[in-house]
Image (tube, rainbow over all chains, first blue to last red; front, side, top):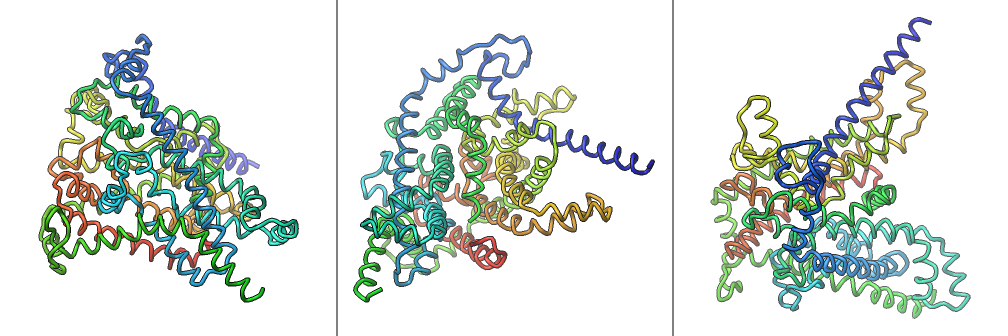
Length: 278
Length: 294
């Protein structure tokens, strides 16, 4: 009896030690973001002189907003993200459908070729992609930022996997009702793949919202810059903007995605998982 | 299925593939081929390749000490970020897989950096690393130590960049470990408890080996990221001081868009492509056999 109590107490004590460690790590991990919040909502002189009673202010946000065209950046990012996701959905759906259901000579080789893009990302080929984008007249356009990502190997792969699990009987039933291939795709396959679209869509949105190096290279003016590039230009040390303003600008750029994440945490996490298992 | 019908299906399938094929050719296959070609030529008028020089550009690149420095940095960066972030990710997953007070919050705290753009994360970490007023030096000052020039001192700058990357990536990898842990049959734990196996030996003898496929998967992702993701360098160090934090892809960017040396950029890109090809082969041969694929 004694040993059992001893064992149990040892068990609970290690558990609580674990809890402490887990919480400590969690606080360290969330701290940078909390610090950015603190800095953004307080006058800049309190950035380094931490005081609980520092007055709250929204001045940093109005400063940031007036010093860079964040409204325009939002618009560009929204246009970019919706454009890319719609384009990916269409192009990847068609390709995935072909890979899942059609007899194409050399299909396996073609599919392997597609999967290469999982490793050779557009940003790795940045120099040649820049040349191609400029030959196509896409420099400094939102299309230019998004187009290289539209034929996404990840999207094709995920949708193909999902389409393959859909029973042929459903397809046959639709054909008996007189549907052609595109109607079958639209009425049978697409609706049944909704969870995959949601998961892939979320991963894609967060990826393109956050993407930096390719948009940086392709854009050179306010008209097409997305938030990340705008933020990068804004907070470059040469610009001499003060840090409280920079943290306000940082929060402005991440706010929509961060709020979406806090609201739909579970979906986000699951979609990363779903897209990751490939 | 009749023969003509079969031919029709083939044609239809090819048409469905067409948009993706066009785009992939334009932005993946063609640029890969032209990059390789450019690396074999010397540029002429307006940067167009003219004179075939074979592997001479590689010779020049391999004689360039900066290239070796950058490659070494990238290796250190990979060795510095990957094992640490994987170990932390595993720890995090074990934490939030068990019973834990405030588990939802803890899980969110770990994962949040994943959602942030690298550029925003770098902005925030700039506050910590700044020499005079940065938080880290303030803390050191309070403890009576003199400050460190975290990003300006060549001997610590790369480590500072690595620390930030680990913070950014660990939570992402945690998700995969968490999923793997949750799909583990609970009977294993019950059996181990009956036999009085300690938690420590259960972890090393059961959990850890079962997590091997996940570890490999995460490792591949981390390897790719270590050559692909350089966004933070644009804010934190711009590759400096004196190339102490320069990484391969950033060096490509510099060569192409700051020094306007497309040939060198193409040659380094081919080196990166070779590295990625090795990683890809690793994935398709090792990982495939471990059933991660369906």
